Length: 242
Image (tube, rainbow, N blue to C red; front, side, top):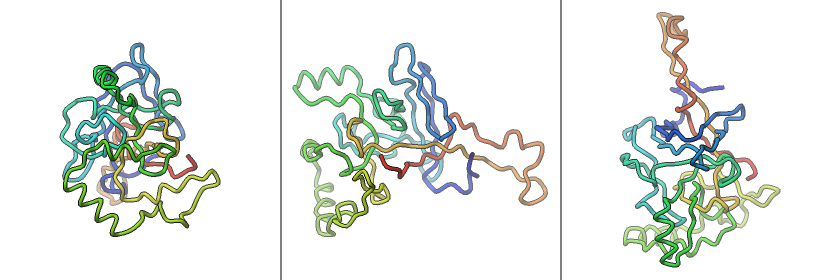
């Protein structure tokens, strides 16, 4: 299936690519991307993810400040083709199926090891406070600036987040609905942090070229009306029991 481009939610349409050539990606019938490892890369292709609409269309998903520890916030930034803007897709080995993750370069891994720091080589896209990992040390490691401290103080005045409410709905497996994190900024988390890692689905979109009769696609353009599902899609997070 696919959606008409005019019906996609604003800022929810992303272009996948360009990607490295080692390995392959294929969208299956359930909307997941199947990652096939390459000859040299166990994580398969590394791809840029570019926002497809809005004032910042064409800019890239980016790990803020090249943060190499969990807890880095995701935002949109001009593309620079560095590790913090290159993402791979999980297949159940290094990262869970459906996950999107960034991989630390080997030289950064070695630097962290030499400094006796914890190393999380694969950083998955996830949400705060839903997984099993202790996240308190992530905030301490960030070294927040005055603006971030001010935002934290404002949050404290507002009160608990929706997912922190004692009556928040739970799935049978004890996990809370991702809807409780609506409007919150996505952050990096260890790919092993069960529950926090978001599983993504990919829906191709159709660009309709109307002919003379309103509501009809002209025969001449029908064959080219569907945008390539291999590299363009709306990315939606699942709200199933993770």
